[in-house]
Length: 154
Image (cartoon, rainbow, N blue to C red; front, top):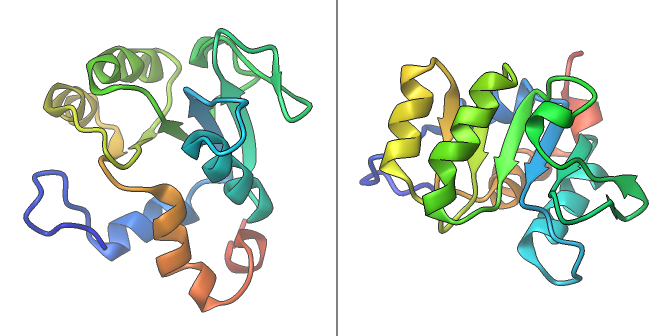
């Protein structure tokens, strides 16, 4: 459940808006190691109708899917970037997202960067921070019945 006292608080409607308006998701900081949150969340998103582009300069592929070294190397502009990187890296990831013309960024649970938040907001990006996309999807969408493809209107 989102923490209403957090400076990064988003309403359920805002969270749903990010989820509903996204089809292609780049996952920055993905790992290829089983049990890692980035891999678990990515698998969940794929299983629920999202196209996922892994981003990690140290990997060539993740689960037989090509892995890209950075956001600027992607085959197109993703609808959303989900970030699994330490807080100190967030401002640089935001800079790269701005360069790549990304409009929405989701910083995973446990990661906070006020500088990154301000940078994203100043650039007009929609941003979620310190909140798990998988948990929010489960809470707001999965209980409503079905996969993304059955709830989206694209």
